[in-house]
Image 1 (tube, rainbow, N blue to C red):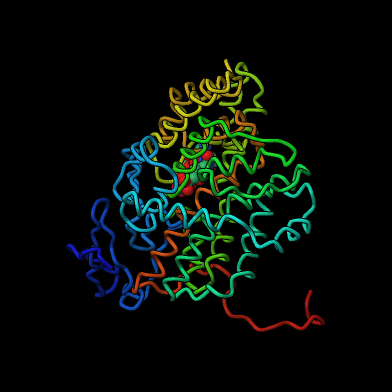
Image 2 (image 1 turned 45 degrees about the vertical axis):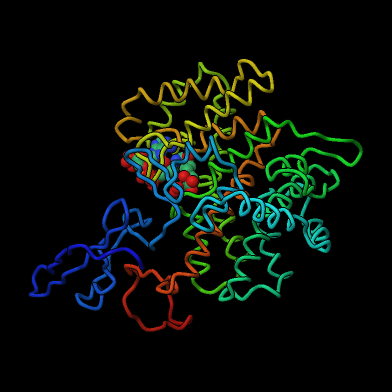
Length: 435
Ligand code: SDX
């Protein structure tokens, strides 16, 4: 651990003479954390923090978020600078290795990734085990998990070379698996990856090309896709990353851990929100229906949420949402789409929400998912593929966090406790004696 002990917190148990001095740990920036690891042993009590909203589950050097200020840093670099000046594979190198690569390192890393883009040929038939109309996220969970059946030569997580080759394989193969899930769904032939193309360009090529004719990826769309990947690459200890860390803490192989992360990301409260935003805009139908929809959201009994708004950490504008909105305008302009109805409705929804006391009082702002779906739809990507793209990008963050955890000598198997509210001890009642 590199966090430093800096001061302490004294806890006293009411009605007893027991107290405990709890060390406070400080990181580079951000709140201190009370190290309560000795609490149960000393005072016989647990802490209680539903959803771990105030619990630091680990130390990490990869991503820092200041939710109040709307700040997101990757290895210290602000997300807006990375999105505007870097590229996805360079950000992947930064997350995995801690520093931006020089030219030779960047070229080596690019070559390393692009030479693992193909899937084992036997995996092709794995796709045909799914129904044609299977949700592509179900296919992603299955196929990524199945990768562990193909790489017995590199599953020793204590071996640095095995960890590195697994990282390359996952970063390289996720776009191929994603594109093939899409092609399988629409009944078109799989397109093999092309190692002469950029990472995002190759993904769009595999999504849109057909064997029957030449296909050239629009460079503006390739750049937009690369930037969308950067914006989704990592985000501290969110639900899916915590899932990957918890699975990894048992020593499970990286393919199984990433498959678990994909399953966790699928939920509409998390990575599935971009798909849910488009469904919400389609249900609203037209701008004049927005006020009635907003009233429904404010009615607690309706169970309706403004998808793409709100965040567990950001109580300010999600910095990714601003960049996503700018990218949205660039893509629509490049595609010659004027007055996109979805974008106009999203902008009106945002304008109303940001001036409404309900949203202001609860500090609900647009998050990364609010605009991403509009861009992807304009690029011709079906709604069902939105969370798949999120998973492709987040694999870089997941595998970086997994690697950091495995290399942390202090890490141990994750095993939260509980407050038991069930029945106290009682004897079994034979069926003949039950009422
Ligand atoms: C992602 O963690 C990450 O970093 C995730 C992510 C990443 O990159 O990994 O950033 C990606 O998951 C972004 C979030 C995508 N999800 C959505 O857009 C779905 C809609 N948003 C919400 O469901 C909600 O905001 C969450 C799940 C994102 C956050 O939930 P919290 O922190 O548990 O917030 P909460 O439910 O406690 O809400 C606080 C209050 C509640 O009202 P009260 O009970 O206090 O009266 O705000 C309300 C909520 O009802 N609220 C909303 C709302 N989000 C919260 N009301 C209407 N619409 C919303 N979207």
